[in-house]
Length: 114
Image (cartoon, rainbow, N blue to C red; front, side, top):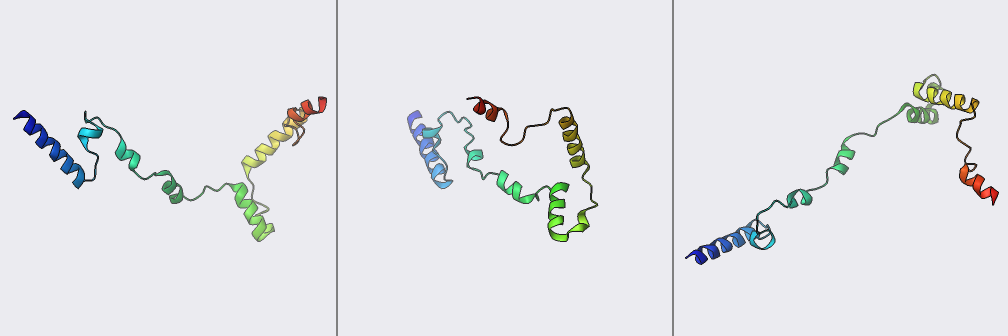
């Protein structure tokens, strides 16, 4: 009697898996442990979130676009972060701590010694 009820439960599980298009629990996951397959089958959210939010604009890119389109209209717009960055570069250049010019770094110096 116990074996017939087990067979009945097994056939019920197989029928349920066919109807709802899931894996048969007795074959793939006998312990009924969570596998995370529902989450892994789900569509990725990242690309749709990137399409939802507009691209972030900074003042530097807006200034560049404005100069190309309008000319002198954007001359008075001040980007304080860019101005501070340029001031820091000038200070570093004064003390000799500025980055080397392109192609004249450590790798080029080692290559020149050979």
